[in-house]
Length: 230
Image (cartoon, rainbow, N blue to C red):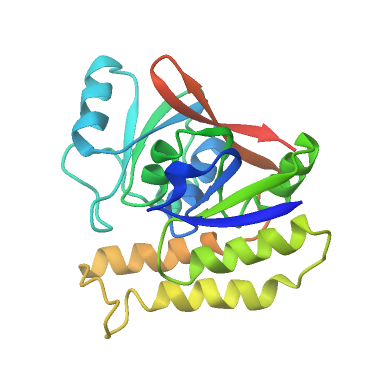
């Protein structure tokens, strides 16, 4: 299998099987929401679009972030730890983030589309292998090291290797910690957001927590992410 790497800037050209990776935190959050019973997640690119859809579908919940924090009018931020103990049975969610959902929306030429993370890593690999495709494109949506680490881990698994997850998880955790420690990547979040992020980070590195892949399918109203057992 040929494995290509793309970025948020180049994913619009990707064809065939495409995995859009956002480990911290969009697709970890999406996986947790689906595991909590959500029936589907509609990824969008703007806050306005998310709120317009919610007005059209009053039963939906909206989650996501701008600059790592929940926008006004959203029910949840981009936080897996905020959802992990909820019962979302049968609910539809709308998600807007600065990286992950952008990658899904931009990957318009993909024939088969997945959201990529570590919590569904093995299931994602199984789902891709089951397609029998000759190639796959892994899209790293963030320039921090967590998405390249996940892409390398998935690529090794797709090649039939059995990579030790430990060094990849260490890279993800280090990239996450850089966001909340003094330095060039410090996000300057309030204390509550930092505390929540630390809990989120533990979930983001919970490799193979779930036995489903995040499959994105195009529908009349846009994309929809669902849990695909694999």
